[in-house]
Length: 94
Image (tube, rainbow, N blue to C red; front, side):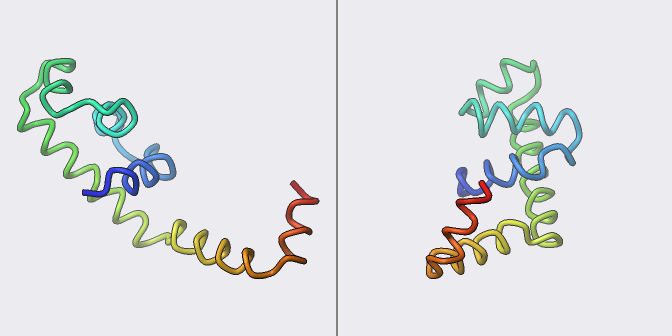
């Protein structure tokens, strides 16, 4: 599992998850808790944490597969880096 990638997906789509999935994934990705630490923190089994992380990551990937935000953003960045005039115009706007 690429934690950096899923952390980015969580930042974009996390609000679409259940509150419980958000809580567990925030601890896992953003606080870098282990499964055991989350289990202890939330008083649930390690298997429940593993299942929630797995299901949450699958849901995040499904959202990206439908919306393609990261893919499109990366394509835009790729186009911008080769066009200095466009890059300057965007920098003026920002």
